[in-house]
Image (tube, rainbow, N blue to C red; front, side):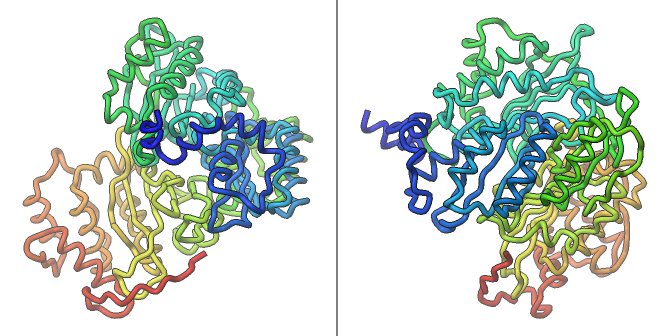
Length: 569
C-alpha cells in the first residue's frame, strides 16, 4: 500500500491522507490564509479558492454559474460585493465568474457570503467537474430544439458537495451540452460533450469524449435521449473516478485515458455502470450560425449582447445591467464568449453602449493570472484589428500561456503568448494558429507561426483577415475548409510571409485535391518575386524569412542577444 502511494502524483498523495471534503469539515473554519502550506493550496481549490506560493498575498475566488444563468438579485448582490471589497471581476470562458485581488483577511467572509446567497464556489477549481456549460440561447431562439438547463442543474446538484467526488476525481472534467442546432461557440473542447442529434425522428444527443483546449472531442458513437443523459453522466463520473489514472499528473486528463486504453474500452467500462446497452449515434444536427448584437427570440422579444471589456465588468456596469433587466422583466445570462446577454428585450435598441468590440474574442485572465506572459485584456486593441474581426464575426482565442484557457486551438484565429529572444530584444510575442473547423468539431486550428513579435502582430493578423476578405467566403470556417486546410502548414506560413515582405495581397487558389510539396513550391515561385528557398527546405526558409522580417535589432536572421526578462504584466 505504501509503495502504491509513492507512485501517486503529489496531489493524489494528499487526497490519500485526507479526503478534501473531510479537510473542509475539519480544517476550513480555522485556516490562517496568511500562512498556507502546499496541501492547503491544493485543498482550497476544491472550494473555489486559488493561491500560489509565489504570490502569497493574492487570492482568487471562482464562482460557478450553472448553464450561465444567474438571477438579477444575485447579479446585483455580486456587484455590491465587488464594490465593497474593491475586487476585480471577470467572466470566465466557462460562463462563470472570477474575483481577483481578494485579501487574505477577507477570504473566509467572502466564501460564506457568496455561497449563502447561491453563488456557488465549490468545485470550481481542482480535480472536479467544472462549471457545466451550454449555449447562451438555450431554449429561447430559432435554433433551440431541446432546453438543457434542467439537465445541467440536475447534474450539478448531483456532484456539488458530494463527499465522494469533491476534489476526488483524477483530474478536472469539463462538460458541455447543447440542444441548439447553432451555437455561439463550439463545445468540442470539452472532456464530455452532449451534442444535438436526431435518430428515428427523435431529438437527443450524440456523445463526444476526450476534448481539451488543444484537442477535439472524439465521437463515441452513442446516442442518448433527453431522459437518458443524467444516468449516462453519473456512470461516466463513476467510471472516471474509479479507472482514471492518478499517477503522472501530465497524463491524468480523460484525453490520455482514451489514448491509453482506447475509446471502446472506456465505453465498456461506462456501460458496466450504466447497466443498459448503448444506442449507436444519430445524425449530428449542427450548423453554422451568425450572431450579432441582437438575436430575435421565439417569443418575439430580443436578446441583447453586452460586449464586456474582454471579460471584465465593473460594479457600475453590473448595476446598470441588473437594473435594466429588472425593469424590463428580462433574464441575465453569461456566455462562454465572456459576454453578458440580456434575454427578453422588447425593442431592438441597445439600452447602453458596450465598452469594447469583444463579442467574438475569448481571452484568458491575462495579467490577472500568475502564469500569463502578457496583459491580454489591456493590449488586445493594440494587437488586433478589432473592427474587422467584429465586422466578419471572426472567432479569436487569446491564451496568455501554454495552458490554453483562451481555447486558441478551437477558433478561427488563435494566439498564445510566449517570451522569445529569437527576434532580438523583444518583450515577447505570440504563436499564431488559424483555421479550426470548430462548429462541426472537424479539426483544431493549425500553427501558422511559432512566434510573431508583439510589434509585428497587428500587421500579421490584419493580413490574415484581409486575405480572408479577398477570398469572398461568407465566413472564416468556409475559408478554412475550402482554402487554408488544403495546404501544408509550412507553405501557408511562407505564403503569408511573402505577402508581408512584398506588401501584396495575393490570395490562395482553391485546390480540387491536396497539392504535393513540389506543387506548393511551384505555386510560390509563380506567385511571388524574390522567392529563395534555403537548402530547398520550407522550414529553414520560413525561419530565415521570419527573422529577416521581424528581427528587432537588425536584419541579421542569426541575431540572438541575451534574453532580458521583461515584466509584461
